[in-house]
Length: 508
Image 1 (tube, rainbow, N blue to C red):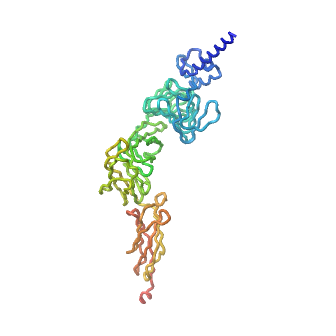
Image 2 (image 1 turned 90 degrees about the vertical axis):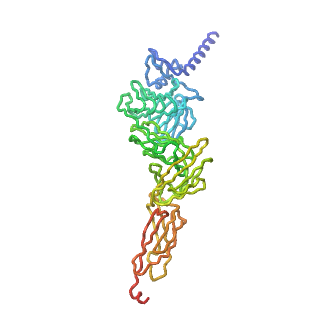
Image 3 (image 1 turned 180 degrees about the vertical axis):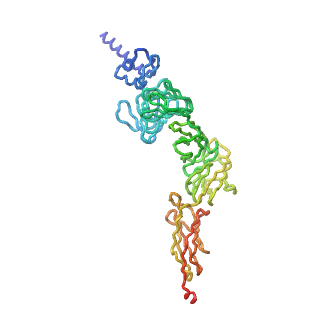
């Protein structure tokens, strides 16, 4: 009985010992250690040796501290899924099937995450750092080494961002990479690793990359190329300047100091990757917005961010802008009327067009900008959003371009100068470059001394009016000129004029 009790006590003691060791994060390797022996010691069975081997790139070096993977605390995991976009899946170590990932999921030991070809995920580490998982990636959480999360990256890429110094360890095959600082990235293919740090450093065995550097390495660590990361782009709007938004979007523009194949642009946490020096970004309403942009190297590693705080003033435009040039210039086709909305309480802003009289902005105010050419909208006053206010004196350039496509129909097309003037129905269909109808115009049709103003029909973008043109005897044709509002277009068509015979003229 005593022996049974003692044996049971020893078994319980060993189980508790294994349980305590299973929570251990680090172990200093001793001569003669093997993965099977360590698995037996920490997990109670040598069959789990692959846990330790995978977490340490298959290396045991006496004197070095290795990671003994832990199961982890579900209430305080090494990382959580902060957000997902597109197809993102999770898999537990004992499962064969991938499950749809959702925000808030805990990433414990041996949990794997996979993104689809257009999927992305953001992981939130314990210290507040964010790990942006790129499309077509797969990673497995291995554990936590003294506050550093360690993952195995099978393919794809991860990018670390933080407001303070952080660290992430990444296992790629037989090598462990340490990404330290506030901005670093690592991308893996079947044969290579591309790694770099905009703010911080990256190092592995016999490899060290300082801030501002990126390198391409074979999986065995041999270097192929090292380059400087691109310099931060420069916004074309200075700090606290006004950016004019139309509808639910705002256009941002910047200048790149170095040639770059792509840029990341972010506005109030919403991020896009673009291939040009400008982007249309979603916006929720009038107020101060935090925006930033960075350039990516040819290797795909991002450089440092440029940040700006801007005051976004949202206007409803009668026509959507077709393009945005640099220096705040918005391009419209034909004409445009602006109505400002969501003006913050306490703000006192005035607008004047082309040096005209100032008008105080309010939700019901409509500003019409007519005439093909360049226009200036000056905004002055005090903008208030919450407890923050700023004096505004901004010049917004607006370009009104002529309407490129105009279809004009009219019947009848033949005039008889000896008969009473017929009623001619003139129909006008102006369209943008992409063929979409132009709304809000007021075309004017003129033939000789007769004029009519076309009004909208039941068909969007179609206008019509009735004209009674009179042609003088002896002429062969009469011009029909149709002009858009503010000379947004001018189209000339011709009436044919019937020539009477000489006998009829003499009888008359």
